Length: 217
Ligand code: HPA
Image (cartoon, rainbow, N blue to C red):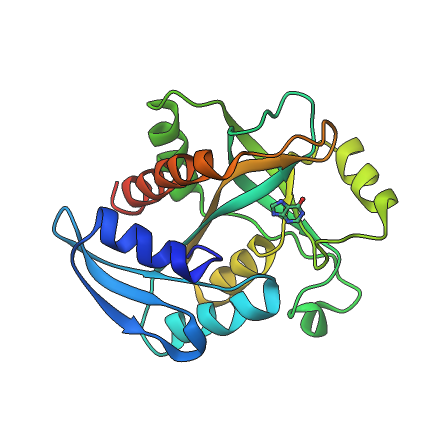
């Protein structure tokens, strides 16, 4: 599940055999095909947890999805995390998710599937990329007016910030399926660097391959 539906289209056309477009509603493209003989759907999630929640819920409830992997970008939050590095998210902290109404005062800890995490880390290590494994922060706000929250996340060792993984992990746990987020560092909150657009496609391709290898390991 990439955030960007056009990336779902690109990834399906680039990595899948016999890819067929299975969703165009609201432009949120989804394609089903095969990878090394395994059936796989690449479905855009849109940006933010409310959007991802719709598509993830429907993939689980209506289509019986058993493994959901987010592939996307994130902002780096530690000095050791460099632009283009890959983060495999063990946990995803968050301030609020569509699941907040269930948990209320409870601080639930959204957590990746360990088998997928292990497989993705070994797939990522085979590539010529820096790989980091640890906690990330799923924010609701891209243009964040609360820099103090980012500072607290950094102080507590959080590797990067994105906007979807915490709800993906929560939904997967609720429905007893596997989930993981594999992220490329596209910009950096400490150095203010940003990945040039021509580099984004290549690092995005790495993530697709890591996700596919992990899903069918
Ligand atoms: N913040 C939130 N989401 C992101 C960022 C960011 O800096 N970079 C990529 N996705």
